[in-house]
Amino acid sequence: MQAANNGLRVLDEGMPFLLVSAVKVILVFTVVMVVVAMLTLLERKVSAWMQDRLGPNRVGPGGLLQPAADGLKNILKEETNPAEAHGVFFTLAPMLSIIPALVTFAVIPFASPLPTPWGVTGMIVADLPVGILFLLAFSSLGVYGIVIAGWASFNKYALLGGLRAGAQMISYEIALGLSLMSLFFVTGNVGLPEIVYAQQSMNLWFALPFAVSFFFFWISCFAETNRLPFDLPEAESELVTGYHTEYSSMKFSMFFIAEYAHVLTVSALMATLFLGGWDIPGWGGDDMLGFGPDGQWIGAAPAWWKTILTFGAFALKTFFFIMVFMLVRWTVPRFRYDQVMDLGWKIMLPAALAAVVITAATVLALDSAGEPFVRVGDNGVRGTFTVWGGLVLTAVNLAMLAIVLWVMDRGRTLAGTGALDEKRAAARALARRRAELRQSPVRPAPAPAAHTQRVV
Amino acid sequence: MSINVKVMKRPQGKSSYIRASLKGMALTFRHMVDPKTVTIQYPDQKKELSPRWRGTHVMETHEDGRPKCVACGLCPTICPANCIKLVPGEDDQGNRYPIVYEIDEFRCIFCGMCQEVCPVEAIHVGQHYENAEYTRASFVYDLDRLMKQTHPSTLLWDPSDPAGE
Image 1 (cartoon, each protein chain N blue to C red):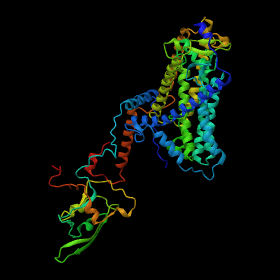
Image 2 (tube, rainbow over the protein chains, first blue to last red; image 1 turned 90 degrees about the vertical axis):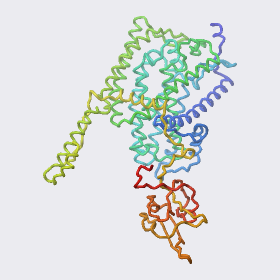
Image 3 (tube, chains in turn cyan, red; image 1 turned 30 degrees about the vertical axis):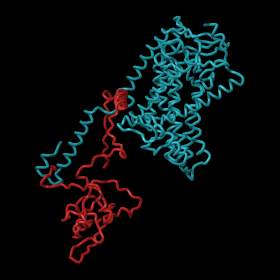
Image 4 (cartoon, one colour; image 1 turned 180 degrees about the vertical axis):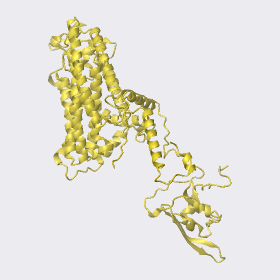
């Protein structure tokens, strides 16, 4: 086994590297764009099923060609440019919003490394050592597109949408970053393949040991993608369609693609960070990291069928998060602006901070107690996590999550629908007051028949 | 005087966000996996019309193709939307017939009073509703067009048989 691993070469130079990279870029871009197109159809289908409708079913079998028809329509449609809009920024904004959404996919590993005749190549477009930092930087860049669109449109609704997007992004970016900090304590690395490997060698997906982080990250992702219940930037009922009110044809379509690309990226990211990425649970054959700094292969031997299998696992996990995104979108109504800010600053920020501190303390305590979290990838050292450290973290985090949920529930921060009996009592009191008003001596007394019929 | 705004006191202990959201998501999920669709796929499937459906008019004809209308003038008189145009004529035997009989289907409110009032059961409203046109003028149906309509005419409500048995 060791000998076979030593025979592996890294594919990082020369013509084959360029070729393989180009193929990966084209493949990933194509797959992402096709999936994004399919997501627009899926969203319409899912919403239709939830509302007992059929959804688009005219173009192609079962409506499968609907995205193509939509795209064609949007390309052929006439573009309207508002006379007062800022020419350059108005055109720049859709590009600025679509590029970060697509670029972030570059650092997400989508399958186990693939052996090629020229060496082993990781199934990731750009294996950046700064992985998550790159991701955070670019995902927050996405809001520039929205803010600039709102400002350049010369439209008050668009401007309001842009402002809201900016405020929301600032509020939730903090919780997003903070919730990821706990992960770094354990992985000691910000590269996404390393994080996947840490989960594999711990035999525990990070959704459990970092349940609080997972929860906060999830909520922040809803805010990040501007989807319900955080779709304040485009709140149809208040702001027409918010920041893209003035956009038409393909520019509008680009905002649309950007939103769904964001959903896809964020779902893939959550699958990678918290559900083990391309890890197939309970099977050690896919536990491979790639090449350590000294050129030594770390983990199990790669194989092409493993790549396909792990890609399937990754796709399934991503799909799960996408479905949750859609389920939430068509269930939960939009937050009020003050609720969004309350949730972001009063709950998520302090709670995420507290969670970071407590997790750090737990990791330190475990470390002192002889349960070390060895840094993966440092000098080619393999991770020697044991599942026990993870289980202790799980217990601590689940306790924290229970507290967070208990605080968030019970109407303390987000008032839900009031209890029905109180509503009924209020309605009864109102009806009684109205009845008394009607019987006031100023007005003529009502006929006896009508009097007996009145329901008080 | 100030305006009274009803302020609902939110019951802190009883209300819930998380639980209520989860409940709602369970409901939408149930519908997603098992949609109770009642959609009628319109151009392919059509809803069965009630026998009393009042739609596009039909002019009944004799066997020799003449309209049954005797140009008595009752229908333009009773028409509440004033959509029937009738110019009566008389032949050598003294039989009255319509020279011009036009119904503006755009103006018509499909109340069916023309059918109710017709003494010779000539004009009918019918069980038909697909009458889209490209121009406003083509909504005015002349006598020939009214006679060519093939759809079944409406069964009017009979006061002596209110349930329609």
